[in-house]
Image (cartoon, rainbow, N blue to C red; front, side, top):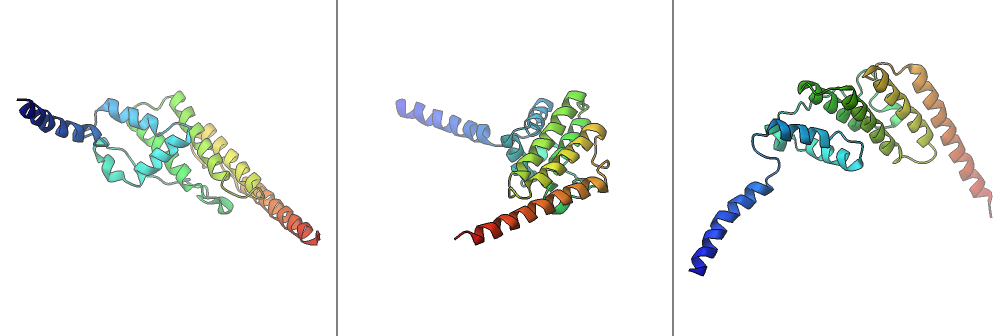
Length: 186
């Protein structure tokens, strides 16, 4: 009797465990879609990493019907002065497009998605050397201000890029000066 009960529990439990651990769920409900969308558009690095992981495996999320399309940084450079802002822009597009498609694009959502964009940019800038990081941070602030004010990066001007280029050149020059000074020290 105990062995039969144990076998019955196993037969019934295994399929439930498989279903419970399957990610993402089949035929996502609106509530599930909103929950995932919200979790992928937060300011944290964990949220960004979860989005990037899902973006690289979009097929697994097809039941959610997300709009993965992106024009990256719109009319502004995706890699201004060699700083790679592409993934940050893609996540920003994802947040705007999917919240709008669900009719949930409120000022609070816009503010959160824009803030997540800025945090993504700052995290990206932190990966560059201290010599050029001020230029990257300057561009990150400019890109953020453009989306915050206008909802797109179309407002980034050539003069903004020129200022950041000058900062980058100063940083690189300072690095070379420091290296030269270090080389002269016995």
